[in-house]
Image (tube, rainbow, N blue to C red):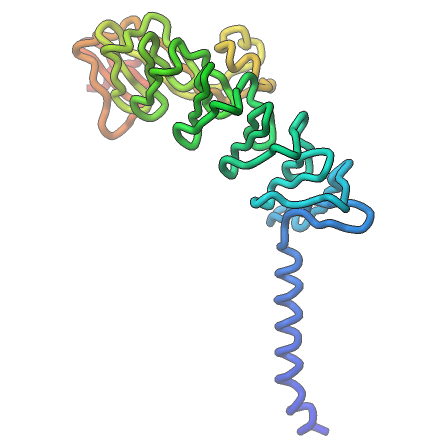
Length: 267
């Protein structure tokens, strides 16, 4: 009997290992799963483990995944993860990238409408910037470009067109695009002024200070971290230099700055 157990033990171990591996693989499988009664979307992460969500309204008989497992469609609608893409036309819907998609009528980012974007002329500039015949877009925000046809990225999130300069979605009032240059990702200047652009905590009560593009297209929570720019009126433009090691720091002939705010000079 002992020798019999000894002969069976290695096979039992192999069986358990294979079973465990199959359970692990099955448990980590994510994406859409079509069932007789409907469609579910499966997610998995270390914190929550495997979760299943019903894709509301999905027709299992005409349901099909579109290239990337994040998107799918049926005869009536388009879906991103577990949500329907509001207003999307399943007949003309297609992916541009993993994040951007369009149909005959609209453009979408991660399944959400980009307001005003024209699908016929929409094209990506980078993974985050895009343009159409009407405007320039940073992610889903139309920046209300002064001249979309001449728009170009200077460096990082600094950009210009023939008439205006920008820090991300912030239009810089009075900036001269002809002499505008980026010093690093936090500072830029033109012939007359220095500009700073950094993230900061932004409370809901300050909503009126935000650019219109952000007010119209971003849900502001009680406290949000946003990327905002401003002109440093105290800066000496000709003598203004940035710190090579700490991009948040800069100085001119008389003052020191941190994140665009005057601070005490320590040397």
